[in-house]
Length: 175
Image 1: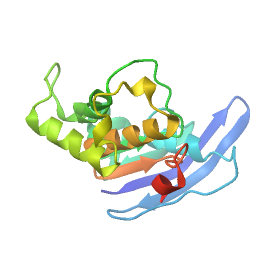
Image 2: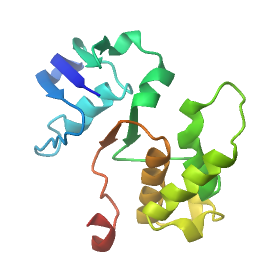
Image 3: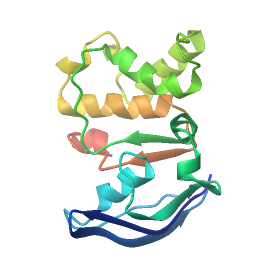
C-alpha cells in the first residue's frame, strides 16, 4: 500500500490550517506527524481518512485518487483510531468491534463465525477479551480507546491511521 499526498491545503474560514503538505508512505513504513497543538496534524489526517476534504491538493491510495475510491474501497485499505471518539449509542463491546468488519460485507449481510473470531482476536490483542458483553458506554475512556483500537484491527486493513491513540490510556497500555 502506498499513500501519496501532494500540496494538500486546508482553509478554515480565512485561516490556512494546512499549507501545502507533501508526503509519501510506502508499505510497512511508519510515519509520525509531530507538531504543537493546533498545527493541523489531526486536520491533515482527517483529509486522509475522508472526514474532511482539503481545500486543494491531492491524496492517492495505491496510485488511485482518493476521490475516485468509494468509501467502502478506502475503508478496506485504511482503518482509523481518531483522536476523539464520541458515540451516542449503546452497543456491547463485541458489537462495536464487529463494526470494523462492515467494509467486508455486502448490504445487510450478517456477521459470520469468521467475523466473530476476528473480533474476539482483536479484543484479545488489546487485553479487552473479558469485556465483550459489557456496554461500550459503561467503559472508562481508556477502555473505550482500546475497544476502538480493536475495531480498527478487526477491519484488517493494510494501513492504520492512529491520531493520538494513547489518549486516555494508562502507561501500561500506552507502551
